[in-house]
Amino acid sequence: MKSIGIDLGTANTLVYMKGRGILLREPSVVAVETKSKKVLATGNEAKNMLGKAPDTIEVFRPLKDGVIAEFEITAKMLNAFFKRVTGVIMFNRPRVIICVPYGVTDVEKRAVEDATLEAGAKSVALIEEPIAAAIGARLRVSDAKGSMIVDIGGGTTEVAVLSLGGIVVPQSIRIAGDELDEAIVAYVRKKHNVLIGEATAELVKKKIGAVHPDVQTEHTEIKGRNLYSGLPDNVVLTTADIIEAMSDPVAQIVNAVKRALERTPPELAADIYDNGIMCSGGGALLKGLHTLLYEETGIKTYIAKRPLDCVVDGIGVVLDDLESLGGVLSYVKSR
Image (tube, rainbow, N blue to C red):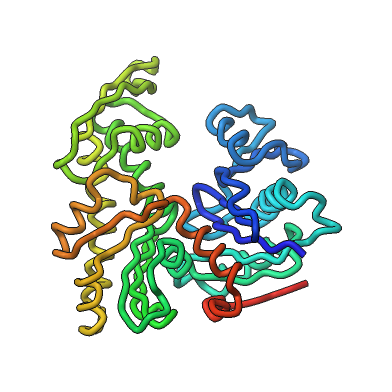
């Protein structure tokens, strides 16, 4: 029986298969026919339809703030992804470990479990996202020493202090990559009277985005619709613009890190001061993040070697060593 791990993210879904590594990395987007609800495309193909589809096609991002917002669409998306990596689901139902943000409700957990089973899994086990990210970042979470992970995804930022294989101090906020994109859209609208889509904002963030002024200044030209004339218009944005645009959500992420540190027991706080803060997730790629966190906390901050893959890498480590690490799985359900 095949065993797979899934990082079911608001922005992207990654699938790991035991013995084969990461086999799928696609946007968490689904395009369906409006009347029949038949799936027309998933992943990159569906994402390319965002903002461009006719009324006969609906394009969904079925997860919001790290949890399932559209149950049936999520199940169909997972089923399509399963088929890509395992073949015919009916005869080859996989065992699945899938991540959930820390602190989600029991109802939200059940939605993930049920959607995964509905998609064709034989069994499903949940792992909390910060634990998976920490394992994937190669932090020694099983030791009797404190370590801190800051995982900035698409829908949530997960901050956690870990020791002895568990989370001692959790801090989860629903401020992350999506809110950064929305902040850029709002900034361009307010300052330049031009409306851009979130896809354009995301591209700008990745290209010239930063969170600290001590980085190389870059600029880029983007296209949108002028709100006065209603006609297409061009805007030139600089790195300083993006820093200013994202300042509010970035401040909330920094404050989440500070709140976690304030609640950390003294002995573990000393360990974190010695070992530093580890950052993962797509948000960890923002230029100047490690500098900003160091200035705000006084603690050395590092970016994981594979920040985009930390969660799924961590699930893969657990899959490969269930005997030693199976205790981090919070719930198992099978059909």
